[in-house]
Length: 350
Image 1 (cartoon, rainbow, N blue to C red):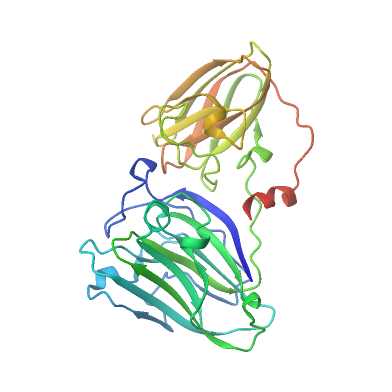
Image 2 (image 1 turned 60 degrees about the vertical axis):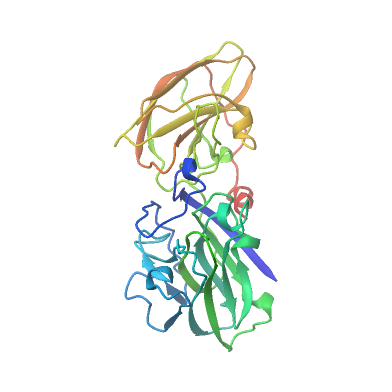
């Protein structure tokens, strides 16, 4: 049996300050388009009529607002399929399904999914979303949530050969929301075909491909659109706040006494966050300094007390995305030892 987590996508759909919050029908969130899967032999992105042709929605909740509906924005494109929790606490067992004839060699079921870790896993287990093939569960959020960040779109690849399928079978594939007093859950970019291999992350997405911060006086422009939230900070961090936005990483070496001064501004005034850390596996614990001005203009100055490699992380307080400019002075420098291969970086996303 194979249940493969592919890659964590871009943005959280709510602010980390409202981590425990439940999505409501008029809630708004933002995400970036998912990279198209050009190999698909079958795909559904919920962009047209809902439910899509050949799909059946089976609702147990009597209110049509609290079953599967077309919702915007989606994890890929404009729309997704989503269920929000019923505040009247009427039980929900909401199913949407379609039939498909499997083809040998094209037995991978892939999809994007999002739900609330807070309300579905820990500290509460009030609801679950899961996927079945002919009634057999092949994935569920509680077991395979992939990210502890609530409402973050994550892509999954399910190898149906691991469940005994060889091709030629006509199966019913169902997406289920069940629970009471739960929270929002959704699916998007449903496809059946070959195994999905994620594209390499953009340069600067993770520490292993960090962009080199120029020495001396510098002005650097960039964007965090299309980047993942790889280095989130919890509340009370070195910036004074949490940080759950898409982040871009720069690297420099500092000797004792070297100074690094930065000022970050954004093109549309989105709420930026910027911090300096030394350990990519422990952003919170290794952050030596940071700033989070509102809406932008975050700035700090740091004089190194220890020699080593430092990572400057350009991020956002929550879901801010767009262009940015960082300027300042870097008293250090960086010479890369060797280039990291995509094969080694890819392991970070599986």
